[in-house]
Length: 237
Image (cartoon, rainbow, N blue to C red; front, side, top):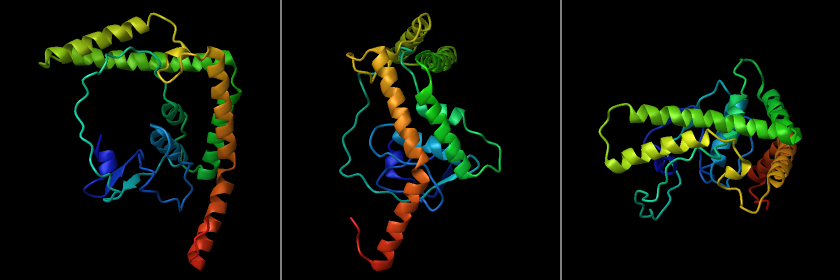
């Protein structure tokens, strides 16, 4: 939605932080790493903030870095019906494992997040496949419930929209009849074999865990550099 990058007309309190890499954030209290590279990584950041500070609210200020010129956008005409395949969300996995009991420090929670990711890196092939298939099955159930509710709510809709809902319902139903495959994930190259996908995921999770383990020290070093820059008014490359 465009308001994500156009900003809010007034200060807004929300629960999940979704931010642009150019507007920045207040890191005076420990926050997780932020990766301004690929789509969806702002949601992963928000999930990790929730993990570290589950009792907190997020304040979105009433300003933004404008994105000009505005592109001419039109409604998509190539929207394909839902297939029910390949649905997986690492952000949801993080929030599903968030502890909401009060009193746990952010540093302890960061250590716990590191362990959570490292456990994924050390999980067996069968264990990862079971986790993946469980996530896909749960998402299929949510999709089917939502589609069925839409089709049964009696709302008059254009024929194309009604057909989209019906085809999506049929697609999800069909997908639920077979075992989910890793190669169903849309972003996976056709040339990748299942073992390659599992190995690369474990490698990435392991590297991420190492980064999380060193994040407090990295953040402290960055603070020292920033303090020196502010004190001397000299930019340090």
